[in-house]
Length: 200
Image 1 (cartoon, rainbow, N blue to C red):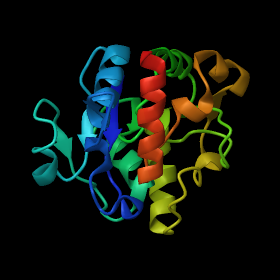
Image 2: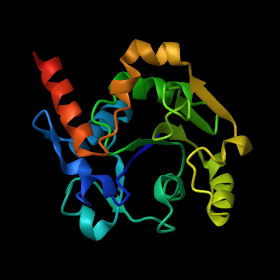
Image 3: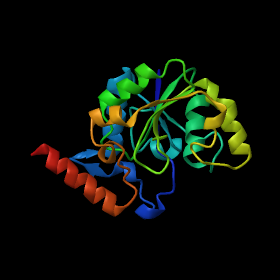
Image 4: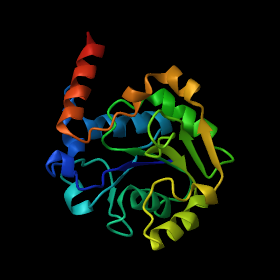
C-alpha cells in the first residue's frame, strides 16, 4: 500500500497561501496528515505537489508534480496512481483530523475494490479525498480527464466501488470533524478551536 498527500489547488478562498502549512495545535496540517498516513501504512507518503515548491515544505517527503497539470483533485489522484505500483491511500493535505484508525479501516477494507471510500454527510455522500484507489481506476480517470470532467466521483460508474457505511464511519469520530477541510480562514479558526477543545 502506497500513500499520497494531495497538496494541489490554488487556495483562492485562502488568499493563495498554502493552507496545509497552517498550524493546528502547534503542528502544521501537512505534518499531521503525513504522519497519520505513515502510522497507518508503515511508510512515508508521497507529496503530490510541484516539487520545486514542495521541497521547501517537507524535506523528508518526496514530491511529484501533476502528470497532467490543471486537473484539480482528480488530476492529483491520477498522478498518485500512475506514479506508484499498486493501491494508494490518498488524503488531502488540508484535513487535520483524519484518524489513523479510519485510515487502517480503509486499507483493510479495500481488497477487491478499485476504489474504497468512507461515506460522509457531505453533498457527494462519500469522501473522495480520504480514500484508497487502485490501478483499476487509471483508465476510467483518464477518460474523464480527456473529457474535462474533473469531478472526483465522475469515474465511479466505471469501476468497482466499495464504501465504509456512515454508521461505521461515525464510530471513528464525528464525520464533520474527521473530514473537515481547511479551505478558508473560518475553517482554520474552527479547526484550531476543535483542537483546543480536545486538548483540554
